Each structure stands twice: as C-alpha cells, then as structure tokens.
Image 1: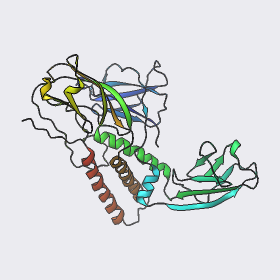
Image 2: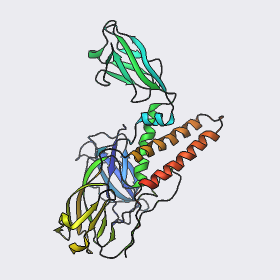
Image 3: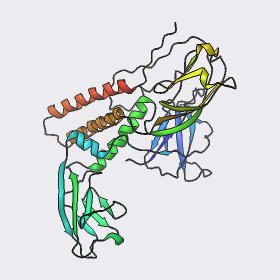
Image 4: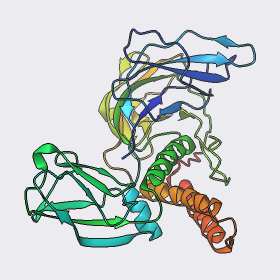
Length: 368
C-alpha cells in the first residue's frame, strides 16, 4: 500500500473571483500555517500529500492568481491515509514481468549473524516469505527487508541460532518495485481526479444544497482523451437536483442516510427512496414533498464509499500503472524497436478508456 494523505473539500463555487486553492500543513491544529504545501485549480477539490504523516493537520484557502489575493484559511482538519487501488504484485502479475524463486537456501544461522542476502535483487513487493528452520517469519516483527538489494535483516530477538537454515520464497524482476509503487500512487490520484471521487474507504459527511423546484435537466458525460494527462476535464460537475423530487448527492455509493431534511423539517424514511449505487435520493410522489427553492434548505447526513476497492477500479489502476511502466522502459531502450511496446500502450489506453466510461457516473434524466 502507498503512503501519505488525501485532502478533500467541497468546491467553494461562490468565490468566483478565485481560480486556485492553496493547501497548507502543520504538525498541530493551532500551529502557524506558513508556506503553502501546494496549489491546485479551484475546481480540483482534492490534493495528495504523498509524504504526509497520520498526525498532520491541514488548512486550505482560495487564491486569485491574477491579483495575488487570498481568502482567509479554513479551519484545521486531519485527514485519511492514502491507500492504493491495487498491489505491486498485481501489476507484475498482470504484465508477467517476474521470475519465481522457491525454497532458496539463503544461509545458515551462527547465533549472531543478522544480515542475509538473497541470490537475486529487485524483489517484487509482497511476495517474500522467509523461513528459519522451516518456521515462517513475520516481516517487521522478525526482520526488515530491502527489496531493491534483496537483503534480509533480522531483529535481535529473531536472529537465527547456530545451524538453523534460512530459506525463502519470492518473486524477482529486473524492474524496481519502488517505481511500480510510485506509479500506483499516481494512478490512484489520476483515477480520483478523473472521476471526482475516491474509491478507498468509507466516510460520513453532512452536506447542504440549495433547493430548486424547477424542472431542470442535468447529466454527466465523459469523452475520450489522452489518459496520461492529469487534467480533471472528466471530473463530474455537481448537478445536484435533476428535478423537483430527485437529488444527486456529491458522493456515492451510499451506505446509509442518517439524517435528511428539507426546509428544516426532517423527512421520514418512508417518504423517499435511495438509489445507493448512483447516489440519488428520490422523494415519493405521494409524499407531497418537493425540493422547494431555497438557500441551503436541504441537508443530508450520509455515509458513502467502499469497504473494498471495486474490481474495475483495481483493474484500472493496474492498467494505468502498466502504461507508465512501459513508457519508462521505452525511455531506457532508445535503440530498441518501439512498435510492440507502443501497440501495447495504445491497447491499454483503449482498455482504460472503456473502464472509465463504465465506472463514471453517466446520467441522462429527462423530465416528462
């Protein structure tokens, strides 16, 4: 899994004079938030701090890059740790770029020797199993491991005793697991930017909407583009109300709705339906209720997200990572024929395009 923090916020659409958002970080909530950690476009409502710790705090502000004007900073918040949508092992497995090694005789214990080197380097992350006298050992508890150099270092309490055999099973490759891990993190950020939401974990949120009883039609659509471009052209715009009885929530799928009110009055669960996968709340016709026009008069508290990463998202992450791996390999082979790897990249791009179209929220609702 990758490391770092994801910072998400609701777009501040009323601040039309601004075109960017600045992100700040500090070690405590009340600390001074000096130089901005990073800057993103106003419509990009998430930022990834790939080196952020689990104890980091964050604030954001709106920024007008033309006039160098900045809004007040937000309240301090802590955020969730980033994961990746697929494992390093999955990428190597998909690309078939690995060799298997089983029951390698790594060495023999002396009672003091802590460091043992495997016969191969660039070990595929998540594949190593180390045995001492036939007993499986636990990484971090019994030993640390450098995948680039194939080096096992036992902690003092777990150093093999005299004559104990150290053996290992693993996959190895000529391509670095660390690079694959970096590309997986980039693919996760790319997917979230393109689809406007995260597929990692479950969260709860309270959101307010401006009611609109007009019969409006909104939809989301996606078009083809070069998926190496990290621009957020495909990110859904918040359509919110599709018609006077239908509310499109900003996050989905919906796990549960815990509170829902219109005009300050709680709506009974019997008076609406939830389309969980689409993230839609629909008021029953016979309830007599409408999303009446008003300012922030609709409030919803709900839980959304995934306990497990969807298989299509995992596949998408693997294929985006494979594209980056192939590209990096091409850079290292300037005199090699480009025909075959280029065809592979183009085929992967087509696969990626189809998956984006399959998992993106695509609505076309006509009011009759």
